[in-house]
Image (cartoon, rainbow, N blue to C red; front, top):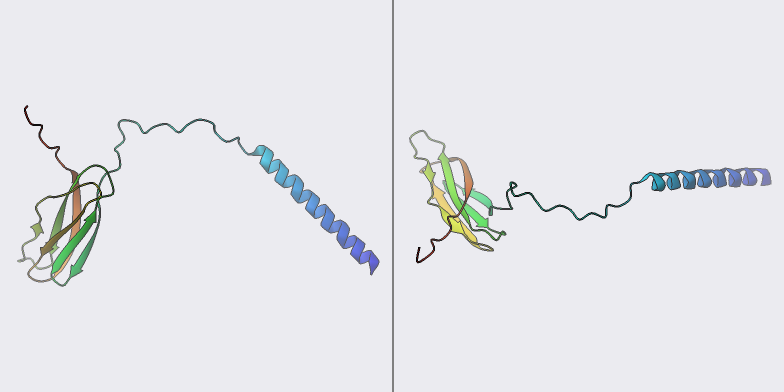
Length: 131
């Protein structure tokens, strides 16, 4: 009985020793953490933009709920495509959603709605007075 205990103890010790050596080798092989500061985004890359919108279809009515988390004003439009060929598809007027602002845009069909989506465009800057 003692021979089995000693044999198992020796086996467990060797397993722990080999695991420790393998972990140490992995730690040494890992690259050192970078000391460099991440580069700023290039001027060609677009900045974060666009209100997050969700659309809800209830029968023949569509409502888009938009919230803008970004510092730039977003101009959103709701587009509704109707199922019936004779039903007129609609595009809403642009609605400006300012920074940290919320907007609700609605549209409808006479009968069923086939699809609805929201498009985004940066809002035009306000004209400067005196120019």
